[in-house]
Length: 272
Image 1 (spheres, one colour):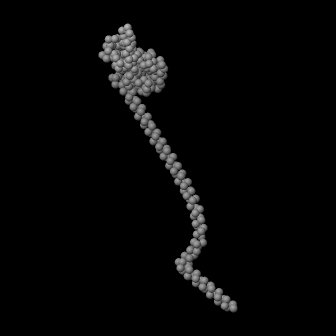
Image 2: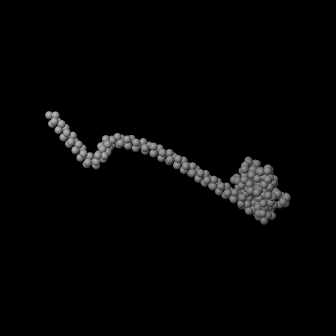
């Protein structure tokens, strides 16, 4: 009996080994078979690990990429800010150059030397009208020198310091200007009427050909405050008082006194 059982066990073991060898052979050998078996056992765990690790990797990659994007945006904003600053500076410089070119275009001063200055302060009231400028005695600017800008006469220097000066505008009520027009045969006195009232002239002979639109300029008479030929104002209105033998004139300054930025001091004194 024992012998029969032994034979059956031996036959069963032999058959099992044979089947196993056949399976391993069909699977590519012993090593390949073992690998296949191991993969079959561990594949569920590998899938689980991969599925968990993949989103974590994406999260870290996204965090790193987001930081890069933020840094790039900050750099682009910085570069854009510098570009805008350069553009604004260029615009300001061009505007300043245009103002300078426009307001210092004063061919009517002829060969008289001038000093360009910038307006540093405005002090206009209804009666007193003055501006401070950036050039003074150290630049040759003296009390009594005329000041011009694009269009015509601006005023007269009344005070100086080494590095600055005060200019009384022609609209100031203390301003008096000897002027003429046309052929220069008629002389009259132009007076300031206050900032909001412009200029005026009285006692203009009826025999003169003055009319609206006539341009008045400095007459340059001996002892006058201004050299000849500086444009002053144009006539806006001619008034004849009944029974009077003269005209009264309303005048408008040719220089734009409300928007002074740059001007020229004419280095001229009555004695010269």
